[in-house]
Structures are given as C-alpha cells and as structure tokens.
Image (cartoon, rainbow, N blue to C red; front, side, top):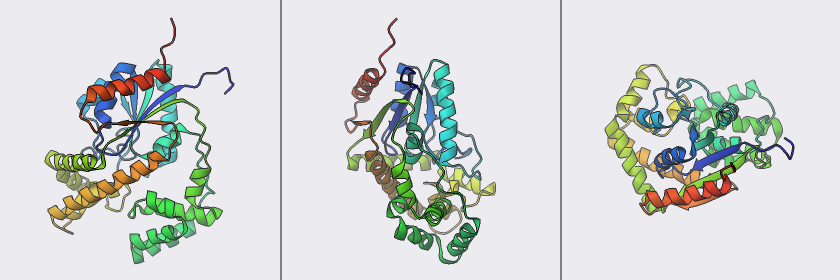
Length: 319
C-alpha cells in the first residue's frame, strides 16, 4: 500500500462477556451504516445459539451479521481461517459503502484481523501430536496442560485446560521452533492494514459478575440444557473444541450424568467469571483501544461517548 492509498476503515467493539456489546453494537451499526462481523470463535457453529449468546434472528434482521453459523460443531475452526474470512468480508463490506464492524470477545481472533499477524509458526509434527494425544488419553487434559504451563505460562493462561487441540499446537510450536507460542505472538507486527477505531467496554468487576450470573440464569430459562442435549444426541462428542466451550462442557457434564444440575450451573458461573478476567487481561495489552466505562446504566450516554469517538476517527467525507 502506497502512502497515497487510503486504508480501509474498520470499527471494532470489544469487551468481556456480558458487558453489553450486542445491544450497543446494534445501535452503533444503525447510526454509522455498519455490517457486523462476529468476533467470537464459538458463534461460527450451527446449533450453538443459547450458550454462545448469538444475536437473535430479529436482531440480525436489523443489521447484516457475518461469521455466524458457518460451520457444524465438529469443524476445526482456526484463528487463521477467521483472519482470512474476516479480511475478505471487510473488503466486501467496504466495497458496498458500508463500515465493517467487528464485535466480539475472542481477543486473539480480533487482534489477528486488526494487525498484520502471520500464522507460520514452523509447520507440523504429526508424530509429536500423536504422542501428546496419547499422553492426554492416559494422564488427562490437566496433565497435558501442565506441560504447556512449564514451558509457556502466558499461552497456558490463554488456552483453557480442556482445549486439547490448542494446547497441543502450542507445545508443537515450541518443539518445532524452540520459541514459545506466546513469544511468536508478541513478535507479530502491530501495524494495521486498516484505519482502526477500537472501542473497549469495561465496568466494575462486581457488577460484571452479577451480569454474568444473570445471563447464565437466562440461558438456563431459554433452554441451554435442551440445546446441549440436542448436540449430544446428534453425535457431537464432548471432546470437540466446540463442545469444550463455556456452557457446553459444564452442562454436558450434567446431561451425561457426571454431576447434578446445581453443580453444573455453579461451574458455569465460576468458569465464565474466570473467562471474563482473561478477556480483560488480553484486551488491556492491546494498543489503540479507547476504553468506555459502562458501569452506570445509561445507554444513551454510552452511545454518545462512543459515537463521538467514532465520528472523531472517521469524519464524514466532505461533499
């Protein structure tokens, strides 16, 4: 890109789960002529609606949404595919005269699109993957995750204990390159191919945790148990990355008789609180974010603050 070429504009809204991204994003999309790209690694899966807190059909009818319901739950979706698809969508949306708008909470996925990430990391070692899978089968997911914790603590913090595929990949990267995966990520160029406007939502921790508990109670009322049971009935294994997602792993434990429902709900609330902390930690290391505190329940004020940020970054073209 030459200096005379104008970078495409990209609006991004991030924040922890339950902070209120969806409602604000719909309002902002209407104001600024946006099409929304979901920045959530789980919303790509069909049939996983309640547990991933997808925008409803009615909400999606108001504003075009992308990267939702594009794969079945047994598909091994990756951050590299997310980056490739999202960049193509940004080009398409821009060509229609609309503003591309990424909304979501999966930090690595969002950041991979915003900046010039390259996903080479040294190829693959199938024998080593097989060895690690056999180790996990024999010793359990936590023991496998402990191996990663010993060589790459930042990646171990980012990757869930039960996410075998990503744990193995991080271990494989270290074996192939001698460099922790977290260091590969840290070395990535933080230059963007876009004119970025990134807004981050935050709120007081106690209120966020209260909202998380309320959201999970609502998910249970909406039929999360039925959703998980239906996925299991269709043959989707609890070992799948998708089925290890928040809400699915914990409720699957109840559906399959491993523990009672109150424990499943308690585990889900606890794990979601921990996930929110990890999200905030990730976003706080990102540059370029303009933070907006949405603790006070005044959506009109929040919309005005965010709208002013966006208008300041993307002023209308002169007639």
